[in-house]
Amino acid sequence: MATYKGIQGYSVQKLSSDPTAEDTLGQLFYNSTLGKFKISVAGAGAWATGGNMNTARYEFSGMGTQTAALAAGGDTGSVSDKAETYNGSTWTEVNAINTAREQAGPSGTTTSGLIFGGMPPVPGLAVTESYNGSTWTEVADLTTARRAVNGAGASNTAALAFSGYIPHVNQVITETWNGTSWTEVNNLNTGRRLGASGGTSTSALYAGGHESPADTTAVEAWNGTCWSEVNNLNTAGAGQAGAITDSTSGLVFGGDRPSNSALTESYNGTSWTEVADLATGRAYLAGAGSNTSGLAFGGIIPPVASALTEEWTDPVYSAKTVTVS
Amino acid sequence: MANTYCTATNFGKGFFTHEDRNDFYLSGHAGDVWVVGNNAAGVSWINRVTGTGKTAAEAQAIVDGKIEESQAAWDALPEAEKAPTAGFETQTRPVKYTLP
Image 1 (tube, rainbow over the protein chains, first blue to last red):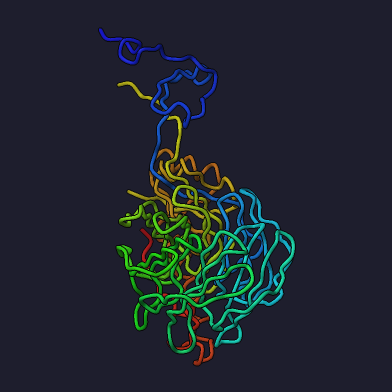
Image 2 (cartoon, rainbow over the protein chains, first blue to last red):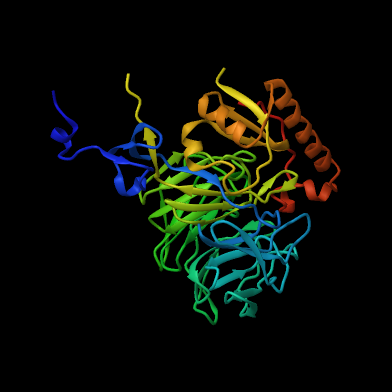
């Protein structure tokens, strides 16, 4: 009879508690405390709850990573100037932005952030504010005032602002920020607003959005010089959020696809794959992180703003009990 | 029966985990209604979060009631804010749906 040692080359370890599954992937062990054989596995990506936000909000600016995220402004029932940061467990209110607004574009991190554009007034703002981890400072305006602006960028000195809405036209305008001023560069191919976006100022994605008169599945990738069409999302919508690293890797979730969608799609640089849903569908939320470690926060479940946070992890490592028949 | 129903307050971190999501179906709805996969892990989760069990009809009634509240709030908006060109993208009239 074959033995485990004969097959695997080592004996089954007897442990008093489960080891870190990620470090022992595929290994069988005996948990002596539970009296059970277990095996470390890598499961499919999934969302789990994070700490609830202090201020429920939607159409706000979100940036950062799963364990260091920033939320600023938005609609809380009225337009807000509140900002808060997330440390992987808890949201903490920080200094407010100078100009209360919603639908502003975001870029950067919790210690080096930027927001730009937005509303009110309804035609749109050009105001840009820079965050240094402590305070918000008004800096140079966008070249074109607008709302529903999308953003990408790694810091408050390198950002990309694109799309937007100036009643009643979806905008194709793209601008780059060098830490001092905005410069208009090559346009998007398709004017639309309120899609999901992210990445850096030289490698970004813009997915979905509202392309009058309907929502779109279109996705464009930015290479630092121009936008090009890449493969579409599986489901059209607007008001989604993204956890997007660059033009080759990202996660898009939630939105009006139709209303209060929980849909999540992952991008590998070539195609979009539908993965596990958010637990609570919502729209006009924000996202941070990547397609292996993402964050979804806030949003609206009409007519109420949401404070919910969900954390995406892919894969999910765990120790599963082995049942023997 | 594929799913079971409960109400429970999402208290944030730890309310449901990644493993929970891989072990049973879970979706949240208005009125703190949760649709939970009807297996041992799902039942265990309801107990862990001190959920209050509901029948499908009871859960649907809670969600419907919340959506009716949303519809009334939308109906009370000024006509200008309901217009498609107003740009208030979130102001679309909520519609009822059937829980899974």
